[in-house]
Length: 88
Image 1 (cartoon, rainbow, N blue to C red):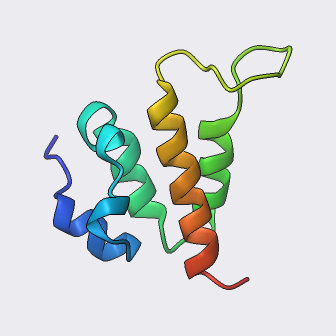
Image 2: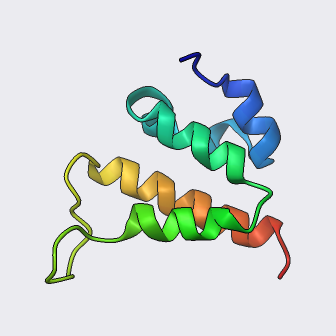
C-alpha cells in the first residue's frame, strides 16, 4: 500500500508542518490515511471516537494496545484541529 505523502496530509488537514502527526505517519500510516480520507466527511468523528476508546470493559485510561502515548496525543490533536476547521 502506498504511503500517503506528507504534503497531501498537510494540504487536506490544513495544518502547518509542525502539526504534522509524525508518529502516525511513521508507525500507523493506515490510521493517518483513513483520517485523511474521512477528513471532510461526518464519519471522521465516529472514527476518532473509535480510535480513542479504551480497550477492555473497565474504561479508565486510554491504553489500547498498539498506540503509544505520542500517537494518542496526535490523534487527539487531529480531532481538536478538525473541530476548529469545521464549523458545526
